[in-house]
Image 1 (spheres, rainbow, N blue to C red):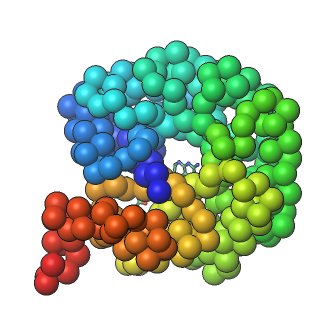
Image 2: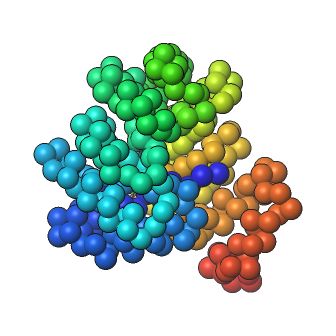
Length: 270
Ligand code: THG
């Protein structure tokens, strides 16, 4: 399972402040800690000021790349910002994201094809995020037709079935799993990802929901996630679930993590 480290996100207050103040140390600390915690990718999101987004994103990219060589996941819906950002990366990035929205497909797919990037495809279009898994799958069919037409291999697509908070729809988990399973059946080569913590927004004791959701989603076929890699309890749940699903040969990752102390905070008996 590929972890996409979520913490360098300008919609978070502290990161927005660091971007505004050009606080290199703060951003580099997040980059280093997330890389050390096993992130395969680091998400970089410059936040919500459309005018400043390209400049801020390039600053984030350069700041992060000065201390880690983990490839970046460029988190923006803005084709112009992405086109500029893509020129600043050292390693082929992941693009986060496209959707069924024609403007986004037209603006972003040529970049993905030209640079041979991975790309996250959200199961939504310009209208809305449907509360119906069949409608979400229909959007994915539309997006896959466009990515194939652009010559992008299926294995470069990371479908995000979209986790919506359980606090407004208790079916949110089921809609997610149904969408994932149907897309997996139709496109066996595509990968999956999710903004994990969305599932628990507005609820208490979120970490339990996030951990259970990750475990169930792994069983359904999730193979990457945008999450907080510094959350040791979540890492422990991930290691246990992967071992149980036969994805940890010789129990190596699990036993290594034990020796590295990952489980120390998870329960007092180690
Ligand atoms: N799908 C895709 N990309 C995404 C999302 C998604 N990118 C953004 C987001 N959703 C995932 N990233 C984050 C980053 C940080 C936080 C949550 C999701 C986070 N949230 C704190 C919380 O939830 O309590 C509050 C913010 C804060 O700390 O200030 O940290 O779904 N493709």
